[in-house]
Length: 155
Image 1 (tube, rainbow, N blue to C red):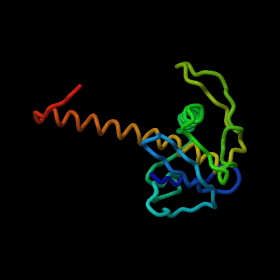
Image 2 (image 1 turned 120 degrees about the horizontal axis):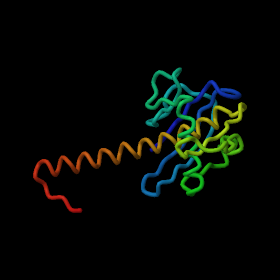
Image 3 (image 1 turned 60 degrees about the horizontal axis):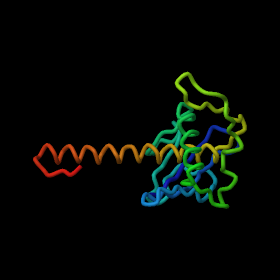
């Protein structure tokens, strides 16, 4: 799956980051950062903020903690790779652990000079998590449909 995250409104200039997610290996490869592009490249999934009208997925400030958590899960699990052409998009140096929430979830302090490219990487990691969740829900729905129609189901 090709992914294009076009982000504006954070540090430095707006930016677009291109990534590729390979489902079989569960690898997310962040491949390249370029100047901001509002139009969709090829058949990529388009992630953006409220200013991007033609987006497939919305990323807002409310998504930051979930995006950071998913970024670290993928980074620590070796399922996120950042190509040399996108090395300056790695948000790791702009994120600092900041305790735990009342619900036991890790909190992070985000540097005020985080770049749009770094936010794009966070948005991409969160999008992949959400897309996988939707895929799993669809598989369960298909299973229930088979059961409801009298089909054979193995457990």
